[in-house]
Length: 467
Image (cartoon, rainbow, N blue to C red; front, side, top):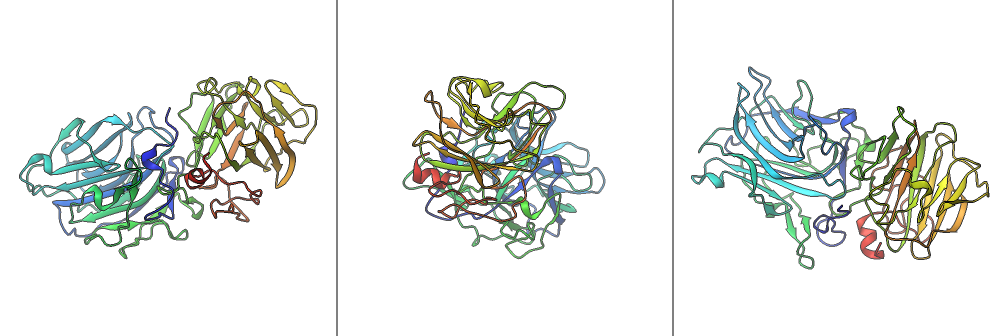
């Protein structure tokens, strides 16, 4: 199970991406704008940095990050996204619903922990068929396809549709919503750029693909550049063209989780039961139909450093839930159900007066319990094997010694039925922040002050402190 892929986690040096936008498919979140007369119907490039959210392998779930929709007869369209198997899927359909050209990769893309850059470059004027459509993932051209139907030479693609849509396939009846984070989205109308125009391999770590400044590129009459740096206008075209209208988005969907500073989220791929993830994998709800215990872990595994994150108790079923946090050994990684009582685990139990549990043994300290709306702060010291718990900014457990049976450590939350947790690792909080506190390195957006010498869980901090 991959955690943070090295090709997607550059933390220092080079061009820095400030913001991304979080799209939650449960909110039907997307953007759209009217289309105009293109510079070219034969040449274009689409480059997108993205980090997947939920529904990676759910049946009949297609997720598109761009579509050009013609609402005329037959409803033709261009599209790029993931199909219901997690394969990269792009093409164009005509008015009869037939594929004019289409490409589906053999490999799948389901990792919710890392950023990736996908570039689609098309030039139908090329005499050689293989040169008409090129797809790059993290700087490397894709060559293995389940479907590869090339456009005919000099094909005029249907790029004149009524609407250009971001994070869904069409606007007339929105569907195929993308779930996750999007950054540095470029549509170049009239230019067939290579991946090297949008990113480069790091000179010190040649497996790391990192973004480049794209402000000097040519965007054409219908092109655009979305950098998501204006929280009051997330659909702003930084190239100066027509802005996008947003639907299902708010200023709180602006994120600092980006390709140059990747933040921890919850991991929906870890086997569990009765759990639904949303809001960029920063919100977790247990299902009401069963009292089976279920939990979720973070995408970052920790071996050193001092780390802080927050959990809002959005909805608790009485006091019979567990605001569970701490370590997860490799042996327990594949079975998180019932984890709160296992050997090798340290956590906080939100009943019986509020107790710590370590290696299956519970304290009788009555630290206090969390109520609906309370925010649990976690200060985790992996260097000294200690954990501190905060209730709305006040410490209720200080420097509690964690289990000595330890492997790689993971943030963890678990509960029984009808419980909702909203998590804040700092990159894009699932709950509204009323204050705003960063760590000493300037990272994170936390509700309460980050304890001294503790840091939020992002790749920039991990590179410094060796998490």
